[in-house]
Image 1: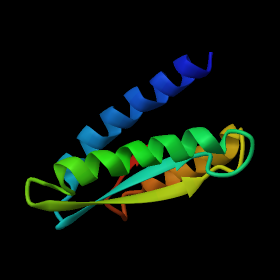
Image 2: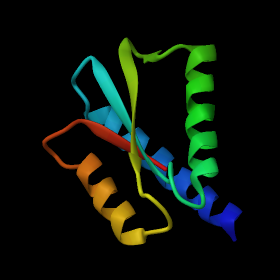
Image 3: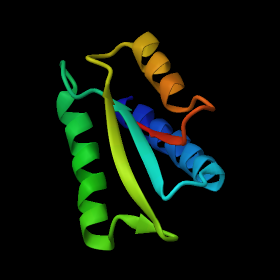
Length: 101
């Protein structure tokens, strides 16, 4: 169950990243990660963030001349309402965010 939920989140995040990077016209692309960094499932959020940082360390933190910046948002536990609110904050039209998590 947890793996299926994580796989769904990663699939959605990939689609959002693809759409948001096409829209961004700045020199920095902010990749927002909504996950649990505290609470009972904090380890999963830390592992995903660690994997993202490790990838960027190995392959660089620029894509098409734009710097990638990771911004993490903590849901503080298994709370769909909080996760939805944080994801909506990341993808508002007034910012150039991309969401993951």
